[in-house]
Image (cartoon, rainbow, N blue to C red; front, side):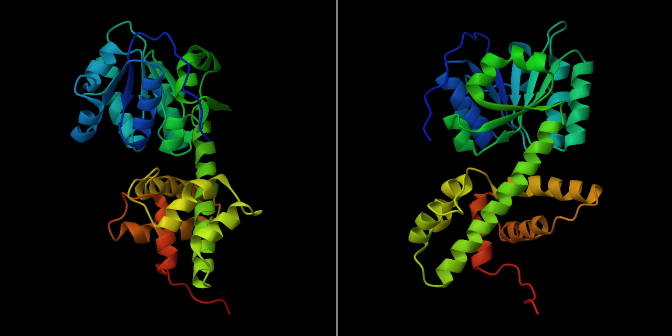
Length: 307
């Protein structure tokens, strides 16, 4: 699905993007298309150089020059460090200035709720905005933003939100959006695994994987996951990830821990984790999570046959 460019908006102050990995790059692309000035930070110098040295700043400089920042870091701990660390954003905000924090990272729901409360107690704004979709979908503008926080704040940020994620769904308070994101990711991951297993099964039967994928896409089994990840599995091309193995494992680790807290057995989740862990063990955690196809094709997990 190819969407038109985002609307041009009159934002003269730069927007900060913290974390210039796959998702961060997608947001920068959207902001650039809308001609919104951007300042970025990443701990990886290579990513900063890709953004451009004139736009790469420290967290302190971003806190001083921006009124809104988009957090695209890896996990909850990095969110805390970026906001509250000794060289973090909030300690560096000039007196009297209000910073609006938009957190797109997928985090532990209870911890992100506490982070939101702490940010607000310091006089700043906090919107939880985890994204359902790949970095490519973010760049195209057809991902889904899951919003958790004040509806008044959402209204204030609407012009910016319209640029970075035109498709949005209000979920509830901070923490609720993360719960929805993890539920979505559980289903998405199992869709990937099911598709990979079906493609492996058909291939072992002697079917051409590309033709089988085309047939699946016309069948009752078709899904958006199949459209995005199916070609990667058929081509066995994982080197340019849209969503990585380690990111998927991080999210499924959260899912599994929350399941244990609720005493909810998640058997398919456990198998999914084992499959991706098999790829991490051989140094492929940086590749696209479509590589679950290889884990299944290689019989990475040996289970007892049913009686």
